[in-house]
Image (cartoon, rainbow, N blue to C red; front, side):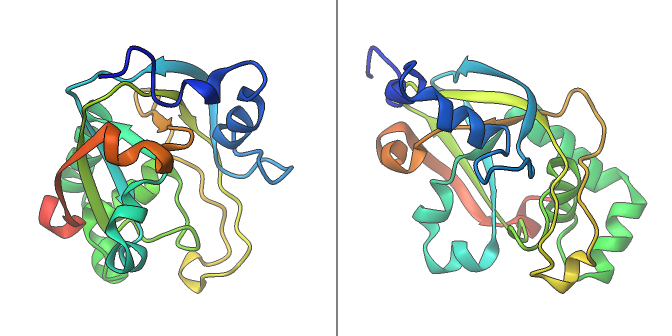
Length: 191
């Protein structure tokens, strides 16, 4: 295990700016998605982390889809999974749009429009080496109208202060060393 986080360089004063902007949803100049109340955290080695992926991108290249920067901690994943199991509205709408209820719950809690991905695949990975991340609460995602399933609406995350997101800068460079995939597949298999 590395004495420093594998992505330490992302948090140095000369480099942190663009990564923090991306975590805040400001990498394109105007705020779209991202997080508020962000803080830098040290991820816990040995813990499991969860990533919802677009099913088509996951089918085309599972490792590339898994190495994206947006993740959730265990407690957050459990809360989203419980909402998918308990809320009839989530279940009914997921059936109408032919989505798994877990994928639809993730879209609601993390404000992920279809134009960004369908959340139809899930990766559960154990952290084996040190990484740092930004942690915060999700912000509203605004749409370009690229996917008709979004209906032209904006995506505001469900207001729940216990739901946070993780943004792990430059994970694609470190994924193979940092994580071991424990389980992966369609979200329907995890509900």
